[in-house]
Image 1 (cartoon, rainbow, N blue to C red):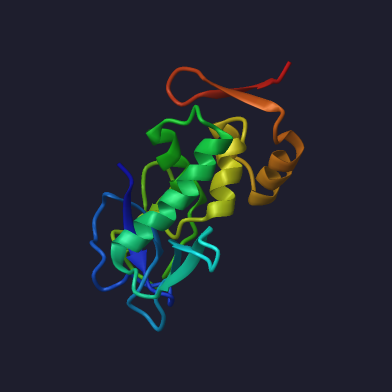
Image 2: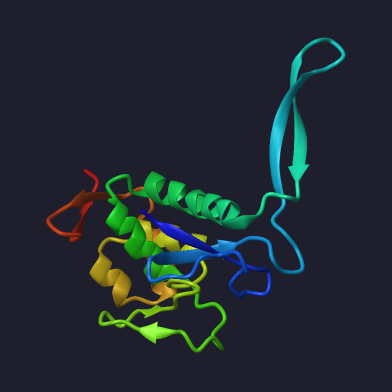
Length: 178
């Protein structure tokens, strides 16, 4: 389970978003000055009866349903880059790559692992780019001890060349493709 909360466009907890220690990350939604705009396609036919897609825009897709959909949209490319990730690995990456939101909130606490959490925001705002790069990283130890710039360099250097193999208990090793 990946519990997702919602933040407004101002970076604060949306009024309808649940609080709790179970929150992993938050993602944008409504409750501020603007909402999330989503798109979809309806099927139609053109003047020659050929099937076509008709774009539809929905400015009313709100709530934690919108936030959860955004986080799912981050997890999908993570798993595409590294299908061996378990749900715990995905949670760990989301937590370690999240961006702290509403730093003035006095509820931010550091846990025993040295990670900051907040009952309103979990580990913070989901960071798609950092999460996908981390999914590509060779080991979680490297992730913990590396800067974002280091991870970006690793992703550029090894993309498509590293196979991941799950060892015991979230330990990852890289093996250059042969």
